[in-house]
Length: 182
Image 1 (cartoon, one colour):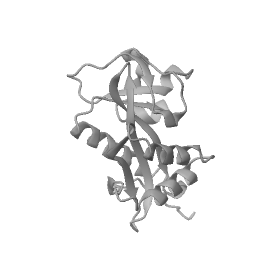
Image 2 (cartoon, one colour; image 1 turned 90 degrees about the vertical axis):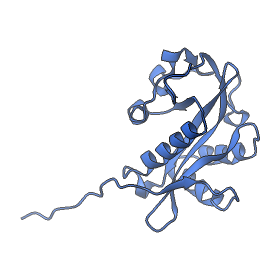
Image 3 (tube, rainbow, N blue to C red; image 1 turned 180 degrees about the vertical axis):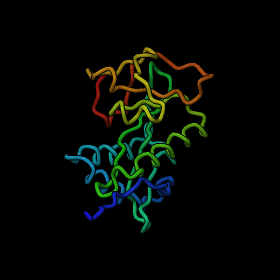
Image 4 (cartoon, helix red, strand yellow; image 1 turned 30 degrees about the vertical axis):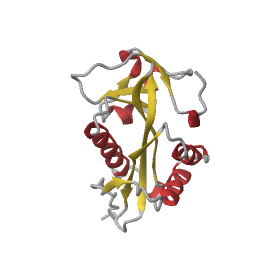
């Protein structure tokens, strides 16, 4: 009889806000460095930390591995759509050994839940449509929202956190750390 190889199954992941005292910053940087091919995302997080207009207390979230170390990270920062406050979800990162096991889903859900609790209305993300659709994201163009750069329509996505409230239309203005001119 052939040997059966068990595939790790997605699991619930403990999530929490990143420690405000800075004690998680190095672990968050390690996660972003390991998850992406360049240091751009890790440097972006560091730059956003220093931007008082973009950085929101309690809007950086981590997922913890079974040993308590940081395995995943999701960041929400302030952006605007034609002057109306919104949130940018970026980056989302998981250590390679924990990818496809639910850490990313858990940390994104934690971030979105906190945004709802804070009374936010709109979250924008530039990412893989199949992944972010599971959270309710749809093409931002459906709301009349445009990014300040060329990108495939299906990759620029928006999530209205309260369907009973209006969603602003117009151009996205990201924090300066994103390096995007309007």
